[in-house]
Structures are given as structure tokens and as C-alpha cells.
Image (cartoon, rainbow, N blue to C red; front, side, top):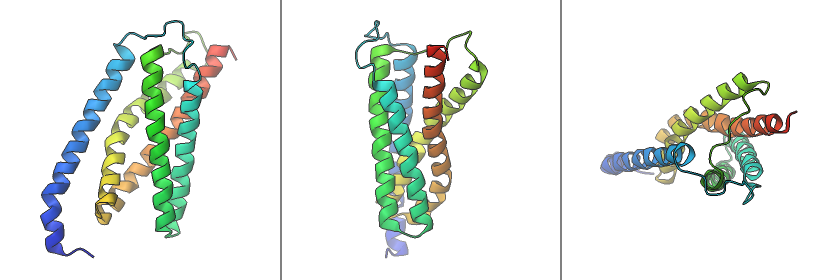
Length: 187
């Protein structure tokens, strides 16, 4: 158990940690926007690592599954199992981000066909996915920071917001992948 004096002493450290996480998150988001919308793709033919979009969707689905399992564990007060599930979700999301960066570095932006059905729905889901993924990144990192540094009241308070946003981003990542693949195949 930490005393009030110990918690107060760690206050500046917590603030510095949160500021560092926010700065890293902004830099990562700006890098991703540059990579996707400015940087020229290095594999114009689209043949190298063509499996990445499917793998990324699988990783997003695995992250969503781990998040839901972690949520069920914490509701049952199984803290160790919750922690393991959330670390798995974080691991899947991290692997997804690596695959996402690799895919966009190689292939650039993939556009939904202009004449394909459901384009408006796809673009609406994609827009919310993009905006909320930029919001989710610092929230996820700060939520983990609070947990790993023993700031459980702050962790619980932020996790109530982080969980649904992270879950939404993971699920809509799979949905946008499926919609794009169906549109590209003409189905």
C-alpha cells in the first residue's frame, strides 16, 4: 500500500510520464499520416508482403477478443488474468501497428473503389476509425502507465473510456478490411 506522501511525491513523475506519452503519441500519429498520405510507396506492383492486410485484420480481431476477455476477467475480479489478457491485447495491437506501418511503407494508401456499393458507409466507418485510433493510442499508453506504476484509481477511471474506444478501433479495423476486400473483388 502506498501512503499519501508517496503518491504525492510521485505526482511530478506521473505528469512527466503522461506528457512524454502524449508527445510520443502525437509524433507517431503525424508519422503515420505522413507515411500514408505523403510518402511514396516502395512496392508499386503490390507484390511484396501482400498478406499484411489480412494479417493486420487478424491481429485487430485478436486484440478485440483479448480486450473482451480482459473485460470479463476484471468484472469477475480476476486481476492476474485481466492483466494477462490486456497485455495480450497490447501485444496484438503492437504487432498490428508494425504490420500497418510496413504495409503502408510498401503499398501506400489503398482507396475504396469510387463506384463500389456502400462507399459512404465505408468512409464513415473509416473516418471514425482513424480519428478514434489517434485518440486511442495515448489513452492506451497512459492507462498502461497508470497500471504499471500502481496508480490504480487513475487506471480504473481512464480505462472506463479507453476500453470502449480501443475495442471500437479494433473491431472497425476488421470491418474496414472486410468492406475494402469485398469492394475490390467486386462482390
